[in-house]
Length: 546
Image 1 (cartoon, rainbow, N blue to C red):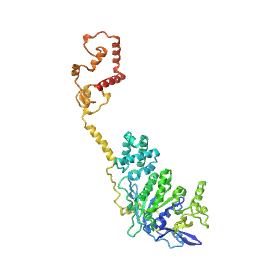
Image 2: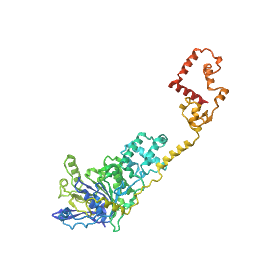
Image 3: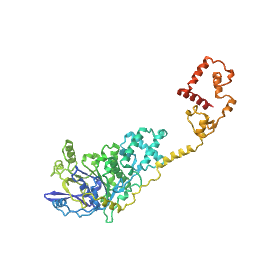
């Protein structure tokens, strides 16, 4: 049977009317919108504690650090007393919520990690702000890694994989298509930027097990999972990608359950506009699909943002439970936003919705929850009830005590670095280098520039091999004396061509003719750089033929 969750009270003729969120329709999603300082955080806290009290686990991002107070029981203050008297009800039963703290950076909570492979190329491309061509290269990197059995677990694995693709781009071109060196460079620069923002702490193992978030305490109350996001929000793309990854994981991890009396978990997405800012169309389609289908997995998703226009219409249309705090209409754009927000509610003949939105005070809101038949309720003006837990942050020492006594204490604190793409690829390079260094010197291929500018003694001393060895072919050449005896050497060839110019019997010498004089002049230029290059080419060609 559906359980009513008291969220607000509406005053009609000085009589309080309960505005309840029905647990059976909580998986129809919702939104909490309003300008800064209008009370969105307290509304979020009240809703989260209401779900926890009926045994529903909650996940939320704490972008300001205020929500950590849910771990302590609240207490009566002058402002809370005034609100209780105004609404005419007894007030909450002061109690704390069972809380588990999480932190991507591992400082203010248990570390949260995901592997590169689990995040996937689409979300990584979104995080790195890649264009279409660069995203295609990212897709190829994942495909080639899968085909070669290379695990991509952390950022060094992805960097090694990208370098491997760049070094062997021509090898993969026929089977996978072109791999642009410029695109690889852009991805590498994006990974470097994420690393400088602390993103390396997020990628790796052990990866978050979502079952650890679907827990209840000994009394049956749902665990409130609070992600410390004050530092994470400084990297907005990492923040939005992480939360979207969690939604996707919930969608893939949980079985189909249909409509339940209450959700299996409720997910609050604070600063939701970061998810949709400059998001490519393919990503928006994925978000819309997840929001539309995750309902059948028993998951309720609630977006928290300043303006309802921050949420695309295709997603906004899926949000049945709405709390609208005040919007300030100072500019034409603000006035348009107020009018658009008013038109999304089911009209109330007793309220001018557009006018009331700009008149609401702190802690006051326009509220429309789904009724017993699953239909949007008529919009009502009401006051958010005070939460039973503490409003405001707890101290760092208190937070550390709660972390140490958590049910997952010690599970995620130590990172694991098992063999993956980085180790395998660097191992291949090391093995190749070791193989080359183990070859005998006679098998080393020397460049042509070494021929013609080194004597046999210099060559032997540099390479530790006998003089006269042919390093290109790996075969010993005859000694100079033997070569002269056999004939057909280089000097014989030149003698035949130029008339004993380079050797032969001195007694047989005669006066040089014109051609011989020209050749001698040319030979004298060998001392210059150009002449040395010519001689290297001639000798290199002759030796290759031999």
